Image (tube, rainbow, N blue to C red; front, side, top):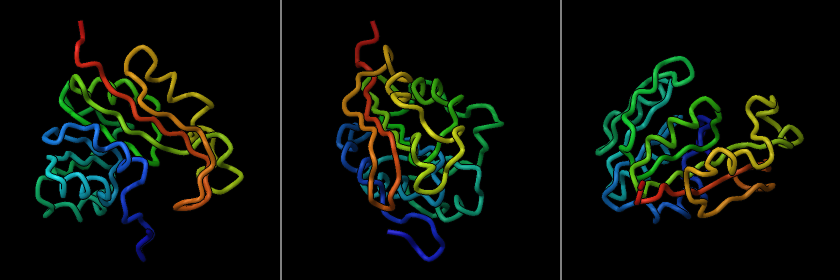
Length: 179
């Protein structure tokens, strides 16, 4: 569902599909949260949520949402602001900055879940983004987590909702035993 301002209102079906894997009392990090569709959804289910985005006006809509702590930060230029091993869940949707991959994985606590989906090569046929810098290469998300997380589910496909797009998405879990 799209609001009049053009931002997505409903949480991603991929995120909601795998959210049950995140500990019910665990802290969640919503990266590139925008107006906070995922932050709001997780907070409504009792999670404490950190939402980070560089768009201060988008984050302002989260200021009064219970259990959500918004942080305005440009993660592409600023230092990573979160401690390792903090989150039961890290959620990223429709955003790609490859330099953040190690931080996203390190942010997961033992048993933590990474739920990630964004655009992939081939999306240029259907619209934006079309710049290869913002499109995942075939199998890229699998390579990012290889040897670090257990892949629960992975897809690389063409979707029709909320609009036709080529996407890659993964749900991967950090081992509970790090020994």
